[in-house]
Length: 142
Image (cartoon, rainbow, N blue to C red):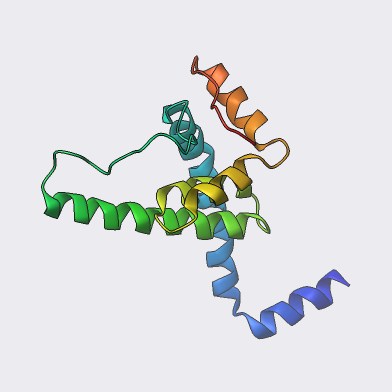
């Protein structure tokens, strides 16, 4: 059964592409193991509070603000796509998706963030990580 499945996959996807996907999934897995805790422990405790307004880089020139805004959204898309892939590959899919969504700016972002963070166990894992690093828990209205 397994041999037939591998042969079928290899007829559709070339073996060198499969190796590339495998290597990239390992790199993404290790990268998220390092990046996600760093990002989550640096979030302000009130980050998910909809009442708190967060202007983007106040006091900087419009050129710098626009460039960093674009780069932040691009990075968010990379995290979001990696998180979606990690739902099927090894990795922290939901947490990676949450980071991606928090970096991207779009209408309804806060509502989607709250839905993701209020999934069973997600907030508990995040607050456990924050507690381990001496940070206060996130305040979220689920």
